[in-house]
Figure 1: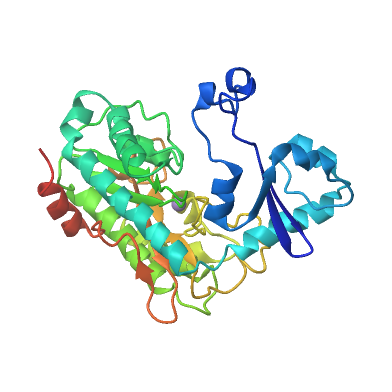
Figure 2 (figure 1 turned 45 degrees about the horizontal axis):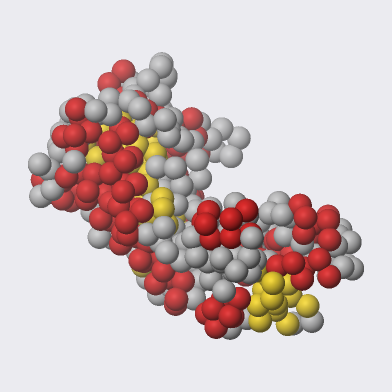
Amino acid sequence: MLVVYNGKSVLYQAPVMDRSTPAFFTDRVYGELWVGPRPSLEWTQALLGVETRPLEELDKLSGKARVVRGHDPRVEGLFETDEEADAELTQFLSELRLVKDEHEVAQLQDAVDATVKGFEDVVRQLDRAKETSERWVEGVFGLRARVEGNDVGYGSICAAGAHACTLHWTDNDGPVRDGDLALLDMGVENHELYTADVTRTLPISGTFSPRQRQVYDLVFQAQEAGIAACRAGADFLDPHRAAMQVLAHGLVELGVLEDAEAALAEDQQLYRRYTLHGVSHMLGNDVHDCAHARSEVYRKGPLQPGYVLTVEPGLYFQPDDLTVPEDLRGIGVRIEDDIVVTDGDPINLSAALPRDADGVEAWMAGLLP
Ligand SMILES: [Mn+2]
């Protein structure tokens, strides 16, 4: 636990419980017999450059403090706290993380690079997934995540066929069939715990059908518009607005909506039946980073250089939705990339994974068994 007092930081850490102490045998949380060797206080202090003291000294602290709640009830009980002041601290910490420095962007790139390898692994093993289920995809990606990084950053969504229309499909127990699409939303969390968040929607056979390609191209165009809108000074919501304009007009061409402008009207928003979610969230140590930042500095604020956010438009035609042409039902497409806002053009950290339909097919052709 980190305590900040008058600008000075002290880290409280459980001491080493080696053979010199009975806790070696008895402490299931820190005892080395149970969990293996752990860093000493001196080691942590040298690594982080922060004064480090034994955890039990925490009990000597008391008085008024602000506490990040929800982690350790014992710590919450040590101090006189105020709910509003605590919430303010959590919010402050979230807002400190909005702008990423060079090191953090490099960490996110590292997480994305491992994620790209994971997607390649999955395509190489699509034949095994066809013999088994979506779980093969989840497992293959999870292997890469554990070997290259710390873990997956969030439960992988491996959604073949109509499962793509379930936004958080994580059961991943369905069949993987030629002719269907597979919507794969997966990200590696690297060793410094920064996570990627990438989605590709792949034709399982390696080739889009004409109708699938129509939907895919539309989502791609929407994403292009969204990424182009990721400019410093623009509203955080501008990428969303740009993508929704494209999707609403495209839905008319697909025969789903009759009038794009009417559908986009503030009191109508009919397109949302098929777009379902916002296009962007911040990315960092958490997949939905900075979640406690005030709305006026995050969702309703401007984009700033150093922001890293996702751009992830999608279209989802539920298999039982009678408002869409029959041949679209059960198709779900999302394309998601991780974008850095700069003083100039946005940088796509996940550009190594092709996004356009031709690029995806060519990339798959080079990997499929
Ligand atoms: Mn996302």
